[in-house]
Image (spheres, helix red, strand yellow):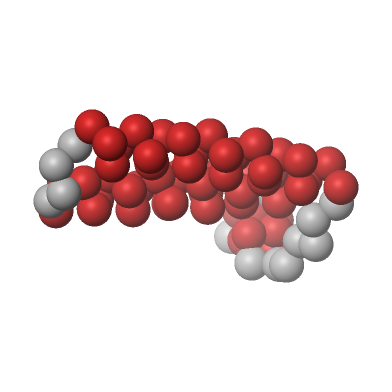
Length: 73
């Protein structure tokens, strides 16, 4: 295996305690996602597609949080 992927795997599967600067990023990401989620609920009918759209926002926030936690690795 290449050392690069080993480092990435180690980073991805290690707990990263958030620092103060991380908490600021997480809060901004959650707030932006919440606004988008509210817009989707307000402007789309309640249906399977709406549910999927909201789920994908949650996934996007989690993935963005991972980018913050892993410092882009």
